[in-house]
Image (tube, rainbow, N blue to C red; front, side, top):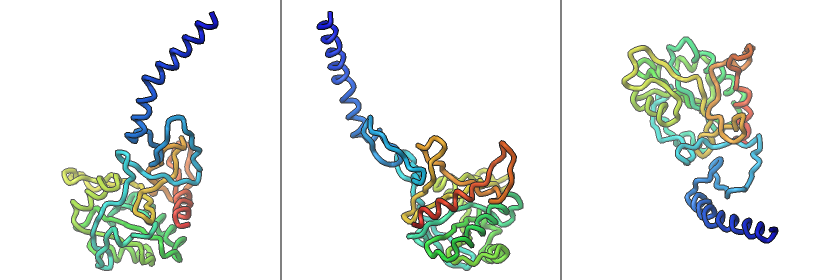
Length: 245
C-alpha cells in the first residue's frame, strides 16, 4: 500500500514538471514576472524597503518625461533637457484659477524655499491657458508668489502641445482639445521626477505598487476631518530628499 502511494506521488510530481515548469520558464524569459521594474523568478521573495521609491511603469516600461519645448516667464526657451540632472516637480495650472491652483502653488513655494540652496532641484509649471498666460502674465504671477528659485519655470506655448503633454506625457488629467466649452480643469496632483527623467513615487499601502502622484491641492498644514483628503506635501518633501541624496 505504501509502495503504491510513493509511486502515485512520484507520478504527480513528474506530471507537474512536464506541464508547469516549461510554462514558468516561458513566463520568466518573456519578462512576464516583473515587480517594480525588475525581473524575479517565481518563488523568489523581495522585501521592499519603505524608503524605496518606485518607478511608474506603463506597459512594463518605466515612464520617462517626454521631450518638450516651451517658453517661460523670462521668455527663455525651456526643454526637458533643461531639467537633466535635477530632481523636479511637475504641475499643470493656470493663472486665472481661483480654486485648487492657489493651495497648489503656495505648497510649491514652501517646497521651493525649503530647497532654495539646492541647485539640483527645480519645478516645472505648465499653463493650460496659454492664450491668456503669456510670458509677461506668468512673470507677474511668479513675482506675486515671491518665486526666486531660478529652476522654477512657468511655461506657456501651443495649447495642443501642453494638453498632450499633460494627458499623454504625465497622465495628469486636463481638458482635451475637444473639451474646452465648459471651462478649464486640471488635477491637483504633482509628479516627482528623478535626475534621469523618470517619474518616481513611494509604495502605496500594499507596499508593492507605486502611489503614482502626490496630492498638491491640500494645504500642507491643513487640519482635516476623517474621510477628507489629507495633505501629502510632507511625504513629498521626504521623497525629494531621498532622490537628492
